[in-house]
Amino acid sequence: MTFEKYREASAAITAKIGDFKPEIALVLGSGLGFLGDECKNPIAVPYGDIPHMKASTAPGHKGQFVFGALSGKSVAVMQGRVHTYEGYNFEEVTFAVRVLKLLGANTLIVTNACGAVNLDFSVGDIMVINDHIKLTGQCPLTGPNIPEFGVRFPDMSKTYTPALRELAHKSSKALGQTLREGVYMFFTGPQYETPAEIRAARVLGADTVGMSTVPEVIAARHAGMDILGFSLVSNMAAGVLDQPLSEQEVLDAAAMCRDKFSALILKCLEEI
Image (cartoon, rainbow, N blue to C red; front, side, top):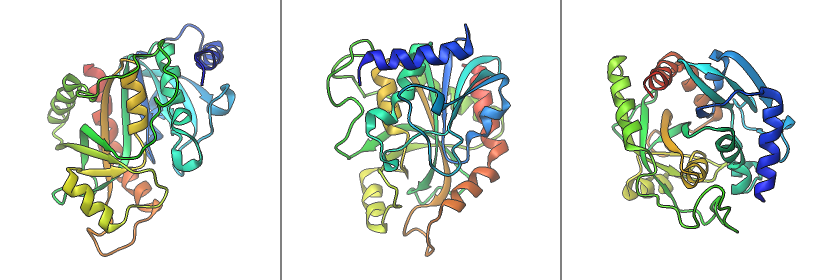
């Protein structure tokens, strides 16, 4: 995809939001889009109104940007994301992150609903991501590099900004919450992982697994953005419990943790 296409999308959004400049971009996963509804002076921009932007079809994803204020910060909230399992390539999946960078966002807060690999975790736990594992061959940076965003070979040694992770722990403590920290492992889906894959993920050092987040994070890091990532444990991963996995339990867990999760994100925004 050419840089011009990103500029066209950015221009289309600017035509709707005027001189509003988001400081922080939030990508909200399955069942977590409710934070967009809490924005003050919101301006909603459906993905379908943006040139080259793909539609979000996953359950619990509204498929729109909301521009407004949260905790005194100017934000752009993605209520839903697109995934590779919807038939999109990695460049299409990360298109919005790069557009938000062009609009002025220099910090990305990314969230997901995930399965717990770590046996010390429980449904309803929130984990701040300190690293990720991606063993799939695809990458959003494959193809000609776009130098307007970043260098050909970006460093990934501190992908999730240490200062923001520390801020997350301080915010959680101030709220009287318990915040986990660990490694998120990316699988493409849409099928849930097998018990054997989960055992392998545990050996490799993963604490949680999911089908999103990592592509957007790679694109954001390439573009020089600071990154704060959270995983909401919506289920124990395959094979941990003797029961099947389902979409509904993911949405139920997000609903159960709505207040706790939103309080943490809003506190982090306040402190950034």
